[in-house]
Image (cartoon, rainbow, N blue to C red; front, side, top):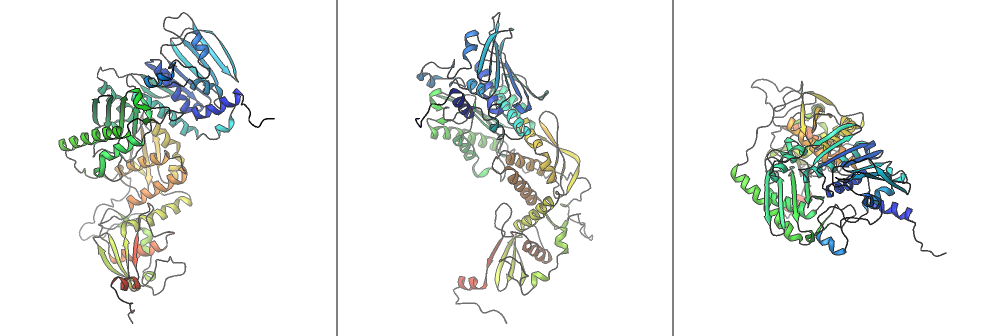
Length: 603
């Protein structure tokens, strides 16, 4: 028996299908692209079981005749090319002739199609490797019905995410197609309920249609005020909508790049976008971007990946310079026309919560909150700080189990720039970053609450509305149980939106709630250690926003209490984002810095 054997078609077809059909969303992407290549102006999608039970795509494209219907499920059968040289002239989405073949290898497929003037429609069915075909009722266009995805490769079902996550991916595919094709009507039903509906934009002005479709997909919050870019040069045309400096969300998830209407992931384009914003981009804010690039077919290679998600440009440097330059120019013009102003902070929105930002009236004591007390700035220190005794902070010896950095006795010297707390520590110098230290304490407090049953939550007097793409809404709702454990209550609202009805007890501003939801969306989009990363990122953000800030004036008692609270943390050396919270110079290091042989302790 030879060691090397030819695989049967049944085996290699299922292996090959894994490159093209990773999940229901990748299947849907292939079918939508086929419909667009068939010149469809209306595409209807309906799924059950998050696309695993069934998925149907119907279009009003040119349709197929009897011979085309017979051939469409065969391997390497395509209407897009006939010779290798055609690849450099191709302006359609697909060209391999493997998509339908791959789909049929791991599911049960029925395709019905009819041309515009045909008196007969045609149907082909593939199930378990058996293909049958015959006449069908005349319905202009093509309908592809896929059911029981991965029925013959059940191991692949185990790699899919939850139904909610898969539905979010399906919606994202439709949103991308809708953004790149504003003249096409899209409808999407999931489990019998309409989720998305994008009517065609046909004003006659492409850029106006593009702008209207972006608003329909992204929602008014994200799409409002985007800067338009429309430039044509030899061999390339760029149409973009990007955020001005003063209207940027906190999430990277709203950046879309298309090359000849194909959604792509490109480090070159992404880096060019951020290069244009440079150092003027506000900390923690990310640009919204919808970019349509039209290039000559020979200027890029879309055959880099089986899913055709990645592209390779013939001239990377040129593409980088074009995108970066155009965005930078648009930003500069917008800044010159309308200087950025700092908006006043929004009013508190939490029911029955004290206004922690309001200084106490003259002659009146500071009013404590349920979980902390006013410190004269934007943050507060938890109730537990008030109950700490100062004895350990001024003790001659460190208590048992204290961290290495804790070297009493400590003597508070004061604040530097109202940001850094300065202590004499056993003859040396010890400095605390008050914000990073308080952030670490609050982070571990919240983590402890969650691990023992859930973070304290408080209901909002008025829900905070957040406009998002439908795919992002579904991603957030899919994690609603997890969000509830960290203090958030969310609910769907309208076609493109969420209502946040409750927030963690430490949180109290509507604007900050929106930022945090955007951070949640980013965490959900990262498949690596999603659960732990989401929890850490969100709780760290809550702690950061609630902690005492730099430039807040703190007294001696607060300094000692913060020091003791940090001592009891599992890791007091840094904030949860990894930024250093302390700096220490012992007596020997101080002597060395001043070129002394040693330091004699005071008697």
